[in-house]
Length: 261
Length: 320
Ligand SMILES: Cc1cc2nc3c(=O)[nH]c(=O)nc-3n(C[C@H](O)[C@H](O)[C@H](O)COP(=O)(O)OP(=O)(O)OC[C@H]3O[C@@H](n4cnc5c(N)ncnc54)[C@H](O)[C@@H]3O)c2cc1C
Ligand SMILES: Cc1cc2nc3c(=O)[nH]c(=O)nc-3n(C[C@H](O)[C@H](O)[C@H](O)COP(=O)(O)OP(=O)(O)OC[C@H]3O[C@@H](n4cnc5c(N)ncnc54)[C@H](O)[C@@H]3O)c2cc1C
Image (tube, rainbow over all chains, first blue to last red; front, side, top):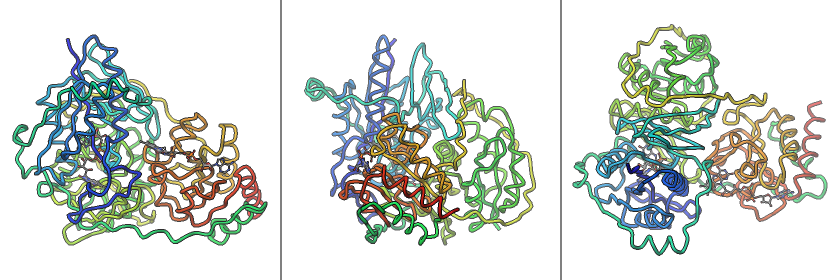
């Protein structure tokens, strides 16, 4: 029987660019390039490896985001995913985490799944909670923040490295998994992969397709509200000295002045 | 006054510092009621009472250790139903964020993660978040339900504020999902005797410039002279020179100490995301153009193998 894997991927503003908020206090997506959140590349990679081990598997990549978010899907398809779903609707603008989890869960259910794989966190909101929220919505086990993952005989196993301990986890499918950047380097798309991706199907769904009301999502439907966003003033230039043999002592002097010693 | 639930992060009854910071913030909004779960939960009460907990709700069921996350969500939900709090405050650890989010969804509330400050406001608690690698500061509110807010370590002072700390057993009925993810093995992290990275007042970090695991001894010696925690860049971690648990940055720990000393670290955006809120930043790097120097209060351009041991010696001498 085929293993149906859905990988959630987010399209985010490039973290190395100059990120800003727009007037409505949502992320300004116009003034900085977007891309597939790098941490979701690890999710695609693990999906590809799990699919390789399975007799028969199909990988669908799913994103919720504006028109440009198709770029994130193309990247994932060029890495080797089979097909893509793009949930796009003007009413989604400004959706918070709880709202996003609703859209993702509905789309995952409609697509059909045995295993959902996500990144550990997006590189913009960096909440790291969507996989847990999606598991809660779907009513299936969460097996999250894994640095090692394997699937066999309808069971997913993995290792989760926490603050005070490293844990071995196990759950029956269907389940939601998230993987960290310790799970293994993501592959680069090959030229062949990039060409093949152009022919792979990308389905578009809107809120109506998912039977979600406009007021359940978007800025209006959000259960959180951003009141202000203030750019941090540039740090005042610090003292920089060149080591001429006394650099360590000079630094000690500074630390004494600041009462750290 | 309204009650505020505080989720207690503890190891066998030893309360972690970020939880005590939460009690300081909770008192700005109402009367703190702490929820402590798992083995040793009741032993947390004395410490929590000293720092302002009016009540401590405990449950020591084995489920909290045997299954992932969901039993704790069930317990917090039971606590919310028992107390009807004005807000729920949770430390921003990876696990606690997941607990907070699932709880929020269940009780029909919004969730805010990684707050660096929480104050009372006209329309409920207002959280400050430091976002986009600390280039922006936002003020955010939960606009529906009981605010569930996770707070980063070092966001508030630990203050003594003696309160009753009456221990009450929390009655929890586990949901069907509670046993979904089994914890089949657990290897506790070995203690280094150094302060916890996220909680430390001083962090000394090493990057690719340290050039080898054996050389990390220089970084550790400096850290020990200051009573500091040791951090590492991802480059140093990926090279196998230092454990991933010590990585500072976007996919590692986010730290906010009084003093951060970066040695042989260039200052990539993903590293900055994890340390840019440090109060005082110091760097040692041989490249005068390294982006880390844009952040520093004090920087030394030069070879860390010369500068760091000299600094360590000087500190030891001065401390006598
Ligand atoms: C700076 C900033 C701060 C924010 N703070 C809050 C807040 O405190 N509370 C709140 O409710 N909302 C907040 N949001 C909004 C929130 O980021 C979005 O709702 C977002 O889609 C989900 O959160 P995340 O990206 O942080 O997800 P994370 O939980 O970090 O993402 C984990 C994984 O979930 C998947 N995923 C997440 N979003 C999508 C998507 N749109 N499509 C496909 N897969 C996805 C990806 O696999 C990703 O790797 C914030 C946004 C920003 C930019
Ligand atoms: C999705 C993603 C997530 C990431 N998450 C993180 C993260 O959490 N944390 C993190 O740190 N990085 C993270 N990175 C990696 C990050 O982009 C950088 O690659 C990394 O921070 C570089 O580490 P570094 O500064 O030690 O090494 P380099 O950038 O190679 O810098 C080494 C520095 O050492 C200096 N140096 C060399 N020799 C000496 C000497 N003898 N004396 C003094 N100075 C010397 C050099 O001048 C140089 O500036 C992430 C990347 C991605 C894509």
